[in-house]
Length: 258
Image (tube, rainbow, N blue to C red; front, top):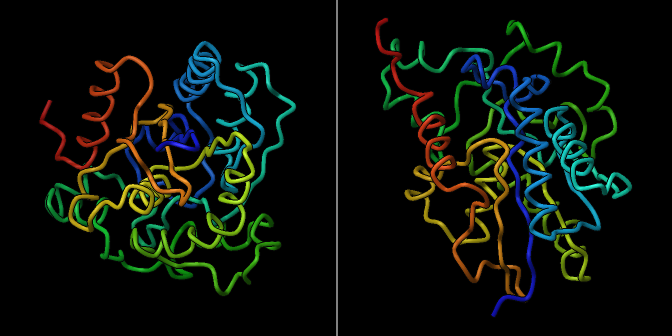
């Protein structure tokens, strides 16, 4: 029986989503379309009667900005927003900044799918020679985390994302849900997929085929143990949602010649 409802949201389109690059922990802003997606999401949630008591985001601007725009569109700007690095996007290591379609051309579409979607495969780690290393690890936002900067990841599989996310879910987000508060989680494609794997009991092999489009709210209905009792519902125009899912999946394919 459904006892709790939670809305899970992948942020609106970011600038590097548009450019089809591995963004990961680089702090890119929302694109113009991403802003519109977040605003449309907020309007949809308001029209469907949702209200929130607390919003959880990552430390990355595209996640936080999405939450702000959603709350503004819902006329709930006063709702507190709680931020944690544990909701950050998956750390793609040395792949950060690279174009997915170009990677598919150079390494094959299957290898790119493994890097993007698999559960246990970790990409090559980032090191100090990487062009975005200093930008990430000298960022002041990581100075007050619950782990030291030296303990922050240099690359992650989806399993490792779930491993660092679960303590936050169990210790911070879950208790808010159990207390009866209405929760929105504005996060990223892979932190959302990791959480879905846990809540829905998705197998290691099936999680490869779970794709979430940007700016589309996902309704989860949970039991007393905070496990899903119904299939997730992607809210909104289903034709547009399926087209958006296909667009995300096609990002890892070789771009057709003009």
